[in-house]
Image (cartoon, rainbow, N blue to C red; front, side, top):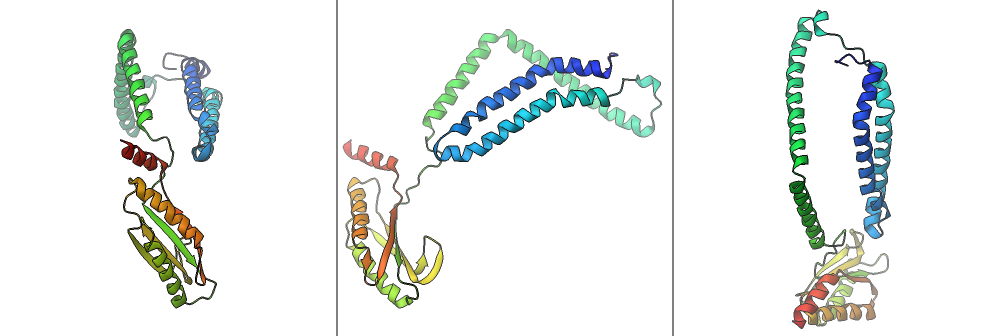
Length: 268
């Protein structure tokens, strides 16, 4: 428009320059995010809505940028008038001075970026080498990154929940918990226990008919102790009824990677 073009012609010329860039950006973002919507497992559950939102917003933004934005520019922009024909006020002079410096700095930045781009385009071989190096580094990082989206954590203990009938007193629950401790401590592979009478760890509630026993394992890198931990779980399942109480759940968070690591360490 500064060179004398009408607003509609300037809008058309601008879209001829940036239209291809807008399409390439939109297609690149869609190519990145749309495939993540088809991931399976917990990763897919986390990424599905995110991918659909980003892809849809990218398509809408590209459509608006190619249609509505240039149309508004053609309608709202006015023909450029030389500054000499205007009689600016003191406030407009101040603003014009600030914007003039900004435009000068921006023009220098644009010219520098264009010069750097031309130099890089001439050194195509160097750019390709750097690009291949970046791809190799990214591939190495993907290779060394754990494959699981949420890595399983092994805290090295068993959790046993004791549940008595509703209305059971705290003393009755304590007796059942003590019987459970006697069974656990006589099982090989248990290093120590931490009982909590009146606590249900599964629901994080306090009740007189509930109890929780944390059983610590010495080391998960010892295969014998791993098998001992399995025997503890089996023993507790077989002795589900202790006195008037019931051991409702016995769980253990064991990571399969650590099992393979322990077996490999013993094999070596």
